Length: 478
Image (cartoon, one colour):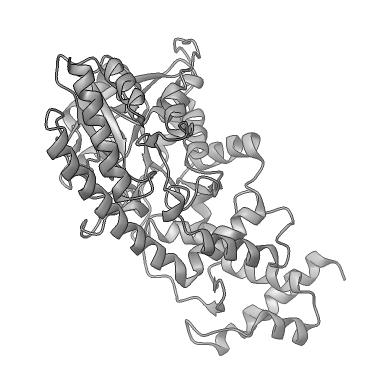
């Protein structure tokens, strides 16, 4: 019998038996199903994956397969027909050069020389990474039936379901694409949503990697200022009207670099303004798993409040784990999903299955929640250590906002200070910092630096790094 036929027959047999189990009830183990139906482990795995995709079964790594609870009634979906107009409005735009300045990205990727304290990092220090849990997950993943075979183009059904649950009932597994990290997801989104030469609205300041993506795609980033409560809706509306843009990229939670959280009263305004402009909101939810211990309850993603397919949601496991666990996602609803899928396939074919299987094993293990709690505790302690040291040693630098999530602080230099000169002085004092200029797509209002507290070894290194910055400031001020 052909494998495909065996999978279909087993899936149908299991469907007929599901009524024997109450919702949440555990199904027989894979080994028991292999023996009962005299099929291969691969056939069992694929049949269960089919039932997962149909919403009839849920699987929990290490625990087994369970009958899914009935889906709760959800509000009717909104109208996504407006997307057809936006997605076809690709003509009559001015083409701009695709000159790309990657310096703002390289600052956070390049390892500093030996002896230099790394305040410019963009990832967790190895001491904060769940290395043992990741190693165990990768080992278990490699033994899964079919682990080294070609994965589904959109990603493993169970992993898509896990990501969908992290958003809410506006998004289902069928709306999710697994990507090779957040940067890849942002690249796919901008290439899909805006033709070369068109404007794209961005927060100001914003993540340099996103600006590099936009410029590489031939887009024209247009800044929309943010304050302590996130993007300012009245300026967002004015920018849409002035430019005719059809895309706005934002980080509503612990914005990079300011750490701002979009205020509750502004959230519906952002969605309404974008919908009225016939535009998409690309939500980069990069820091949700980097919350600090004292943050309190977090607001849900913007995508959780979106019924009309306005939001294209981006998320990743990379920041909370390791720079090498490049597993992320795109979520979208309506006709735009097919365009996102096509560009994703052209760019990457698919994310390697062993990496997806390892990610699924990791987030399904008890160690995952313990890791997130540990990171939350440690990030808060490091933030407090750096904040206290700056207040003692560098009161000249303004710290307008202390974030409750993320991994960095955003400092404003005095108006008379030359940013580049101070950054160079810091490096001579054996401290690497991220200059503020690459975070702006237009002229910055003042000099800034971004200091990361996640990439260093611990509190002692943070204190020593700030002391060295004080020496650099004294040299700079002479």
